[in-house]
Structures are given as structure tokens and as C-alpha cells.
Length: 117
Image 1 (cartoon, rainbow, N blue to C red):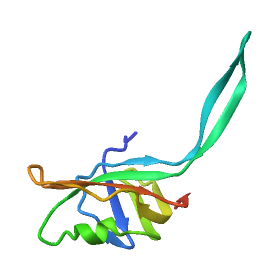
Image 2 (cartoon, rainbow, N blue to C red; image 1 turned 120 degrees about the vertical axis):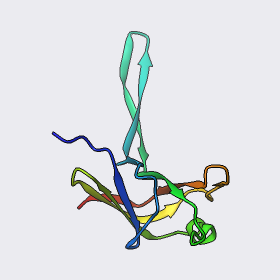
Image 3 (cartoon, one colour; image 1 turned 90 degrees about the vertical axis):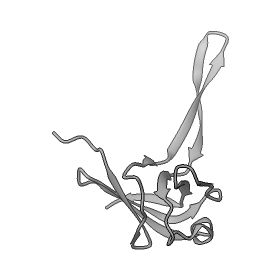
């Protein structure tokens, strides 16, 4: 059985020049135990938005300003094991910082919803 080891990430159909790695958080709920005098009484939950993080190689064609301005995009996260997810209404959560020594920048995305495709 093959284990996921690489990912291809496309933003509005254009492949990002990633290092082949990335993280995907499907979103859902963060739960916190609510304690009482005799132990756990239950939990409360807070919604968590789906997110994607990836490292992009910087070249003479990389437009950091365009990347920083992504709002309402469509992000496709395709693994080498054949599973794919689409982040709808994707937006960059903070401006990417260029690490000149490494020649990379990290992109953090969130969005309105995540669908398996």
C-alpha cells in the first residue's frame, strides 16, 4: 500500500512551484473539555476553517504581490496516492515572506469549504 509522500497544488488551475510537500487541515471543530468538581462534564466546540500550507520555490516568474493578494481562489490539493481536495473561496491568510537564503516562501491558505474531488 502506497503512503502519501508528495502533493501537487494548483491555484485557479495554475500549478504552484512547491517543494512537493504541504499540509491540509480539513477543518471541522476544535473541542475543549469542560471540567466540573467530579471530572469532565462535557465539551464545548469552536469551528475551525479548512487550511492548506505549502512552501513555494521563488523564481524570476514568482509574483509575491499576486500571491499575497489571493482571495476567492480555488485551490486543488492532489496527492500522489490519488486523493484530491478542493479548497473553495481560498484566500492567503498572511503575506508570504521571501526567504532569500532558501529561495522559498511559505503560503498559508484558508477558505470557505473543502470538498473531496
